[in-house]
Length: 186
Image 1 (cartoon, rainbow, N blue to C red):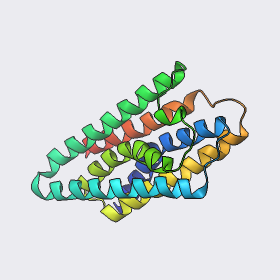
Image 2 (image 1 turned 135 degrees about the horizontal axis):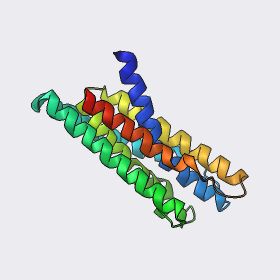
Image 3 (image 1 turned 45 degrees about the horizontal axis):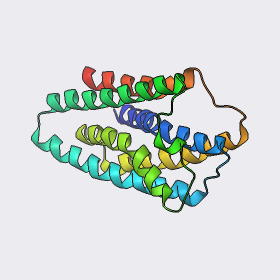
Image 4 (image 1 turned 90 degrees about the horizontal axis):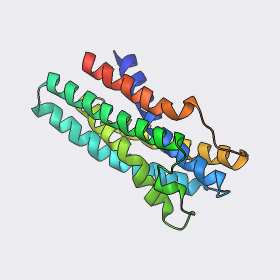
């Protein structure tokens, strides 16, 4: 049981952190370097938002019956998956899907990017908290995922000539939809 919870948490954290990877990649493709402190800022925002929403989900778990929480959690994850598929669709069509793709890094941008990429993580954290996953574990997984993947994406973007395309852009939506179905199934 614990292994399933940890596996689901890691898969969800990876899926909701991929937008941070793309954001870092887009900035790297414009030859804008993100320093470690920007990654830490993004991770801190992700931690704070995820902690707050996981706590709210955990409190709701005590009031709302478990069956309803599973349906609500699965529905929230499904909504985040739909947003990820929408972003992938716009990326595929060559449109800009994220505000961080059009700006240069300025002082305080780590905070703005952190909030932007952590919003979907906070929805996922709400549903994971409602399922009873420890809130500190949820927030930590989201923070590490966002901080690590934004820096990795930036590193790849700085070294690549063109943007990655193909199946990769659909992966976050597929992982989130898988988690939503797992929630609904119980």
